[in-house]
Amino acid sequence: MLDITKIRSSIPGCNHHIHFNNAGSSLPDQSVIDAITKYMNEEAIIGGYELMNKHADALEQTYHSIAKMIGAQRNEIALFQSATAAWAAVFNALSFKPGDEVLCSEAEYASNYLNFLRKQKKEGIVIKVVPSDEDGCLDPLLLEEMMNPKVKLIAITHVPSNGGLINPVSEVGAIAKKHNCLYLLDACQAVGQIPIDVKNIDCDFLAVTGRKYLRAPRGTGFLFIKSSVVEEMDPTVLDSYAANWLSKSEYKLEPGAKRFELFETNKSLQLGLGAAVDYYLAQGPKECYLRIRKLAKRLRNGLAEIDGVTCADIGREKCGIVTFRKENWDSNKLKEFLFDKGIYTSTIFPTAALIDAQKRGLKSLVRASVHYFNTEKEVDQLLTVLKSM
Image 1: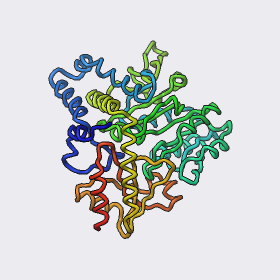
Image 2: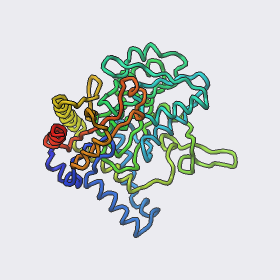
Image 3: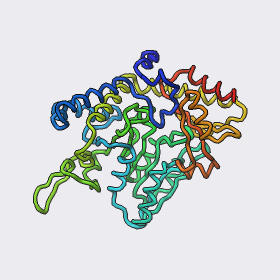
Image 4: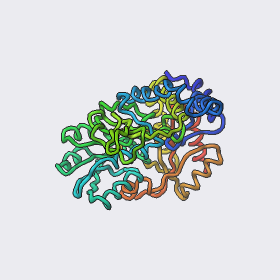
């Protein structure tokens, strides 16, 4: 059982406003803040290299904590500054030839699809979008029908920017495995919200950010690469941390996911990421997710009772991301109005997930993304403000 009062007492931001922008950038626990500031204060005294060596074990622990959280091995984890950087690093390391097919979902992130388009233009890949079922989820049956020897990669988003949708990632993994096809999953809005086990999903690659539901600092993220495929991967960027220079004409890549990392990283943020992961594990991922879903359901039910407000969420199982619009209100103006009331949300524009937005005729939406530290009272305050407008 989560002790919400205790949890909120160690989140400074809870005393400042109602934070419903957790799918954008969530509020850190004090333990995360302390890990970062303590390290930075000490680094200012003894120097960056010296402190890195002094805290080598603590920095290494971040990898082990991440591996534990997602059911992976330590050597399958590489640290990045964002999910986008992690995703792009592995996508651009794949070799494509003209005619190779990449399959994605209708609710793909803009940054991911832009990379598809770039590969299409430069290397002649073929982008194919797997249609959704009647609930708005990627349809596994149609995915199965689209599989053929030309499919090089399945690359989908677990939890998209808008709509509360959760794609059937384990079913996709089973299909990818059956056809011996690589599977890249963007889980930047899933990890920290939905319990994840990469063995159950059966993905080859998983890209994650720290700043969203993990409640880690901005500028953090990580990449999972399955050990059975990593030795075949050749990163596009190398330095002497990712590879060993053996002779004038020879080098050797580091084993495991380390080959995707570069030497220069922010070590204080690395400790902050580790502290956030440890805190999440201590609370219990299943308990956290149950509470997130409970609060999101309360919000959706309340929105359904307000005249002129339409919820835009889809999917069989919905997560903590709730999107809506209000009649005769520009969504960005509405976000600003709520901000002035001390309720922090975000605006989602069609370009965030253009294929889905165009298919459903969506314009901009207000996104209220709840977290386990939010309260029923905070949800009701948002509903009260919307009713009074």
